[in-house]
Image (cartoon, rainbow, N blue to C red; front, side, top):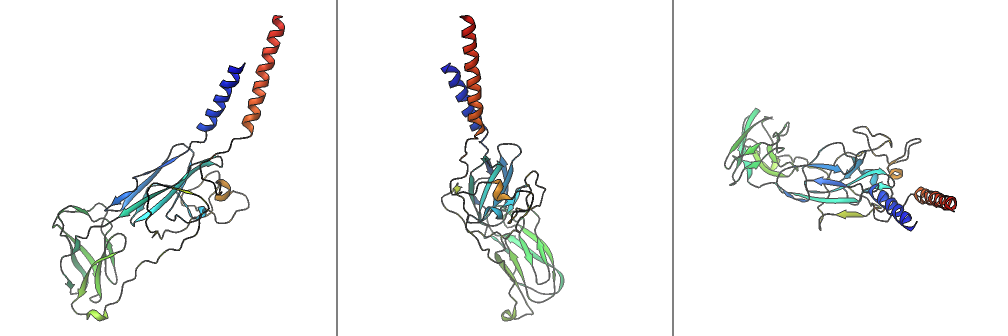
Length: 296
């Protein structure tokens, strides 16, 4: 009889553990890269909703629903987690991506003249191949983005045709919008050149969940992606957003996941399991008692 109870106990525990083991893996891992990074998030179980954010101190409502590869052009932390139900969710994880673009990419000359569609030339003065995909050549009236995976060999050149009104300057920017070089107009005094705008910084908030970091230090959050809201519980269509206020019928993200001060990933036992266990044990004991009585 004791052996039966022991077997049922082990079966119950193993079933509960296997039902609460959802996890999610980010590829590639944390590290330093020299080109924009495509990040994929892969959960360990089917039927999982996966969310991600670039704010370590942001609210869960700020998270984006993962629907495909994430293109990261800036150095940034990545926060991510997966959910099946309120009793089966992964831990919140953090990867840190450092993107350092080569300094060997610049314009061939220092000035430009003329107007209309003009040709500017980029050159790689380094000793290694450089992927210049997503680099930008920007004039006052036009911006040209280099196609992804364009490789520039050592001392190789790349011609770019950009609309130019014949004044101001032409700027070379890396994919993270950092200004790398500038062509000065030969007909415009340097002190009258307009300043091209740069991206604004992002404010952050406080998150009520503990984050499991895969790296000791985190990068500065520089994401400017739009917010997401109104995520339904049963099925989430592409491009829909996580709701910041509870709707009348479907549950919002706070009802889907546990927003507690305890570490995410710690699961509570379903109260139905002990009841089923006791009923099953009682039935087995009654059958054994009945068989012994018949034998007597």
